[in-house]
Length: 387
Image 1 (cartoon, rainbow, N blue to C red):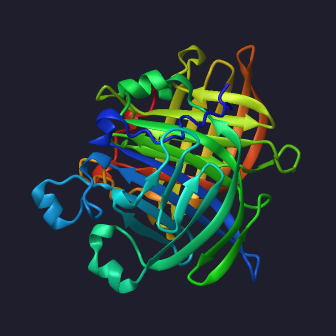
Image 2: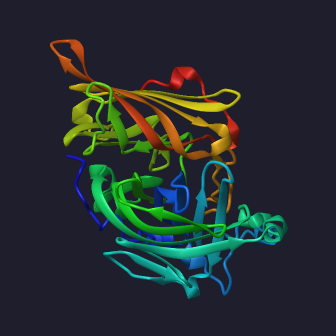
């Protein structure tokens, strides 16, 4: 079973060697409605912490030329917030560790200035002027103003199981870990973007909350998720359904496992597990990413002993960001990490019966969170796609 809540994995994981070379982040994405027009607009908010053992009086920014020349590793809390679509932006606000209050253990709580993130509550603000953004490329962000005050109810989890359990966390077996405590989450409250109010409601937010941590990122980097799903079989909204796919090339003890994805689909309460680390399921995966002039496209086929899930997702390039992170060692190898929140597409879910594939449902997905990137923009060989 993957729908097992475990808030101990949501606690900050920067212990041992990860204090010197490690990151941890809490990600939130959701859709809000314009208070005047009712129009949808997707937003994201993230709290990203890095290298507490290298803390100084001010945030240590790894892309600042003098820090790079001195070999300094980044060290800070970065509050990242932004939006996709027309007027898209990502905004970064940095705090030195001395200005951060971080609760050890569970439930997690991290606070700095007017910014707070916890299991149930998000609040904060980021404002960057055009002049500041131009003068500080080391901030890796755009200009704009965003403020938020939100309540969170995490309804459905994607627990990847033993791969992110305490024994393997303590051993630092993987370079990058993942836990989605709220792969379906209900947000409520308000967001103010460039002075305009957007309201967030549980019924129309299509919310998502997860976290990653480790000593490095992955390449390729894949993420797809949505709980705004409609059955083409019945024409009805699937109210108790959500899918989540993530991964790329995980590393265990610095050895890459070529092109592996973790995947889950809760279909009206029924679990379909495509987690490659669950060896008894005999999971096989194929995936590709394509760019056209105006669109990007994901194609994923996941199979286990009992079912097949075929996922095809699209997103407009003009709606997406190249989301920016620097690794704990100070490098920035992801420079074309496509990131969006208003993708759409189709999932075909099949059951296996006596050697035949029986179509259980064909599902329309909208408000899809989506991500893809490779180090240095290098494209991998297509013959590496099957694992």
